[in-house]
Image (cartoon, rainbow, N blue to C red; front, side, top):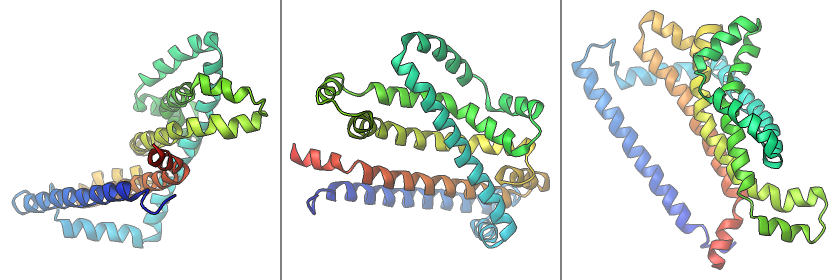
Length: 264
């Protein structure tokens, strides 16, 4: 890649980072001003929230809760992705199978996360398996539909041309199918990551003895807004870090797009 290939993209992301900093600084300023005029238990000051956030990251027990929630999110997403891919492939190849699977997935999408929490509590004893089950069931439809759409976005002409070279299944997967579906898969992970973060908190609120959701419940019982905001920020930081990693993988794996744009 030529030295100037990614300059436009780099400038755009630098601008986005600057805008994000300005927006977040503005939100923090508004919150701090509100804390001067609103009762403390409703709007704690920014320094107090920052102190609570620092305490979370410097306490092993609190950090263990944050890591537990992170592991639950990633495990649930991985399970939903694998199962969603296994469903999407036969749906793409068999119209008959899709006619039966599609309505079931649509029906699943309409079930609230809280309903799955109740079902999991009734069906299963283990807390970790309950949360894993809830995560998979709430994110499975989105993964399935997004992988299916990514697979169907593959050009039929390009597929037939590739077949004319008589590639092995591995070569076909590596040279055509994988590069075609990868952008959709990465987008699916970024979209479902935020959904999973919200769902795991609901699951932990009613069934866990540790994690961010459990800690939020403790702060609610203590009427501690500073602690609630700090634990919420822990989850937000995790989501932003993972999204950043996915974006980095995307930029590396799809760098051929920049080369193609330069060639055009």
